[in-house]
Image 1 (tube, helix red, strand yellow):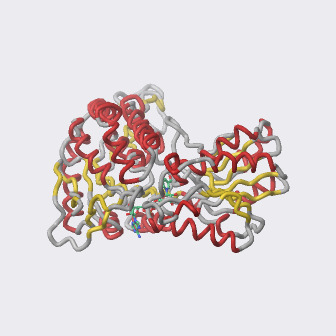
Image 2 (cartoon, protein in one colour):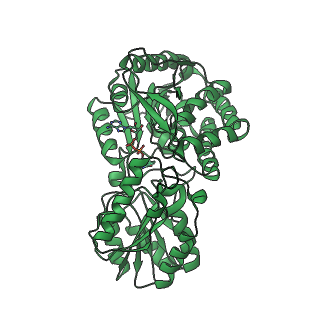
Image 3 (cartoon, helix red, strand yellow):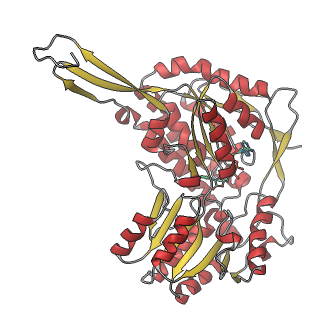
Length: 485
Ligand code: NAD
């Protein structure tokens, strides 16, 4: 019997309430073997976690930024050194990433911790004499209990987009990890405690939709962040803002890459293959559609040549059987509709070996209405469409409802600027297929890839997780009088 997972509440691992009705098997995507059982926590568990965070808030919020940053510095060190390999192996096991990708997941998450460690510098308020003898200053005040709901595709990084900034700014937190990858952050809870995070400041409650809804509805919760599919992001945003609390909900994506006629074929092919096959295509920033301006057979051939030599060890599995079915469904449908499979990843799904594998797939579409060109496939699949002009490519990109990332491949600064100004997405690449803005730049898309105004990391997170208090002060009657004094 696989281990039954506990919640982490008030600084302790705590068994889910005895009346828990549902346990979800956690599988390793490499073989499909069940490695743990994740509870769908009860309303009493949710209440206990939120109350623990609420009780810890007064003392935590009154500590200085410096004090909190020092704890996060220790956390950063523990993740980067003492527990790096242990956590990377856990990510490989529960998620299916390669070891190198798991290290990347940890390193990228830890970059947000680095940013949060600079909070004593970043969060200092402004002060100015705004009228003779009158000064204004502002300070950042934490909100209280913050809830973060995260997806499966980055077991460490996505929770750590919010966790360090939430804590550094003096809030307390309840995290709801993905039920598909609950092991990594369950382990991290004890590491945060070792780093010095006081009991109750960070809590985990495991489960699925009912737990998410109970967290959003809890009267002591002051803000919610969500990362996941667009459909759920929109529901979560509506539910949270409907009860008047802050919500930032990041959704899915359909990222377009555009190859201009002057593209550097070798560099672009390498980058595009990396973008659509990395993490098995399970990245919200992954290339999904390649729009080639004109007829560039050399680029198509180079992409296929590079993708077809990749092995299962280099790409890894996708998360589960449902994903295999969804991804191969799009491939089947494209083929039936007349698209040409330049590289077919379906043979990797052969039941000759266990696990949830789909090989790299390159589809050449001739029908612009094929669903694989419009829906989020979330697997190692690249859809190629030839277009006559750059403007035609930009029009296709603009018409898709998402807006996470877009990229232009060109050697011309003019073409790059022309496209970057016109793409309708929050994160743009020039000759880069995974244009993730690294700190101090903030992460966040546009359109139906994000519901809510702020970005989730860097100064976007700092703004979202705090409210500003503005103080206007006068100590003497100035000689020059104005409406302010
Ligand atoms: P998901 O929407 O299925 O699940 C995300 C979280 O929501 C999980 O914790 C899950 O338990 C919970 N959830 C699922 N259904 C729910 C419901 N009906 N009500 C309330 N909560 C629910 O997403 P996923 O499959 O885990 O992750 C993949 C998706 O996340 C992709 O669409 C990907 O593009 C997106 N993603 C987006 C970003 C971004 O920055 N925009 C980053 C990473 C992943």
